[in-house]
Length: 337
Image (cartoon, rainbow, N blue to C red; front, side, top):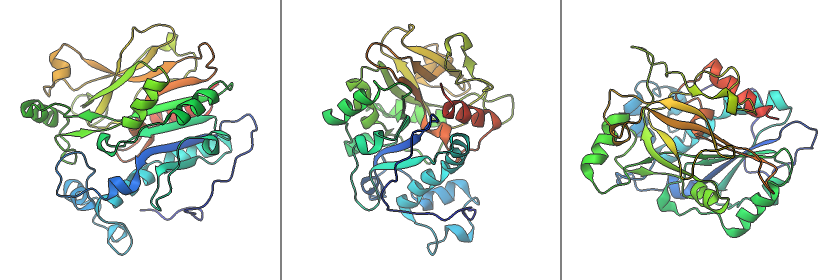
């Protein structure tokens, strides 16, 4: 745990950023922090890990004084803070690139303040990143007023809505399938059922985004290494150049497949597909699939002047490492035209 390079503030009102032609990026965690943090650790489904479980699985990575009860939240709350900390590298790069600090919001924060997406967030935001790490059980859904606010905001030139629903593991009552999924991703910190993304799903429905997040798939790696296999990219479709100098994303053992619920066309473009680990059986690969949809772009269409992008939120974290290729992706998003 490194010492912050600048003083940190918490629980203060957002200071609007001026419009100067460079992107103003905002992150919106679609969860209720209190709901997630106060899940019963005795539950074996649909909750985040406690720090105790993280320490056991990642030993000895967190066996340092910085993570003792005197200096770091224990239980599930500490794990949520790991997520927050893991986006700092992206925030720093985006801030240096654009000249604007990345604003970070939560649907319900640690202090119990509820913040739906409205003009308080949208007025000084050009790229809104909605991180869908809310468990389905928490019932976070976008209300009509939020959908209307985002729809109106997307009529403004230069806007970009990035939707990042996470995985949907074990969505069946078939325990054999749940165990197959578990053995496929191999992460002891993910329970046999962990379903994410009700908020992002509700936005996709309201905004006519024909995508559904499904599964939790382990990417293929290069040979006997732990390096993620390169993306299959489609540069001819990538008019925003999101994948310029990007060969790989971040390795994460359980990534969602962004399943299209409408035919792919000029208005719905898969820009990147990730090879899946074929050495570990899974229902997805049993159907003959070898890659999953990792990056989708919906160009402006009709009244919508802004872009819609779908990519997993773990590609903006450093919990599972990071590469120069991933930083190039961050840069491309920050300067997106």
